[in-house]
Length: 191
Image 1 (spheres, rainbow, N blue to C red):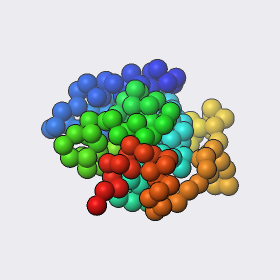
Image 2 (cartoon, helix red, strand yellow; image 1 turned 90 degrees about the vertical axis):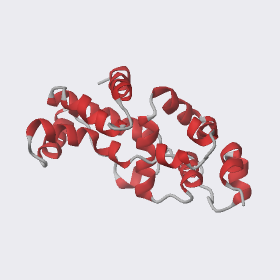
Image 3 (cartoon, rainbow, N blue to C red; image 1 turned 180 degrees about the vertical axis):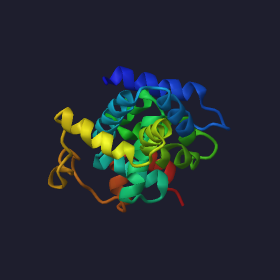
Image 4 (cartoon, helix red, strand yellow; image 1 turned 45 degrees about the horizontal axis):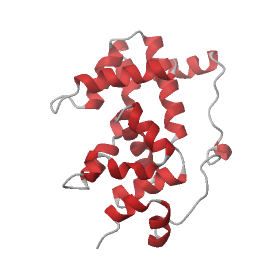
């Protein structure tokens, strides 16, 4: 699946999402209507885009918005960025300080951004959709590993996981956070 197809599916889910059917449920609905092979291709693309956000500056933005950010929370944050659609994804990828312009951060309650960007369930959209189609909870993982092997796709080795993250810095150093993410720091590093 190429990026255009992936973002079309994200847009389809965003178009039908409502307060009663939040994006993550709409995404499962959209994916579950697709063939199983397409759900697997969606997951490959999701992982690739998700991993591209695995950078120190993006993590620092999540740290500011969330008032801290563990490894697991950072996974959820990256999923939430993807859930916001292609335009926001590309903006954040270009420079995460742009999140200060997002309506959830720039609005009356800047802490609404935490609810928007930390979206754990999006990480599991493909597996939930696959389970809905097959009725078998474990089927997705078996099928996905088989699909990856057939496509010659390998997992990122643990030793290479931090490659490409950019320069590490101290998220608890307010001066450094103001220097690297000035707009987000101005919003979230207040007394």
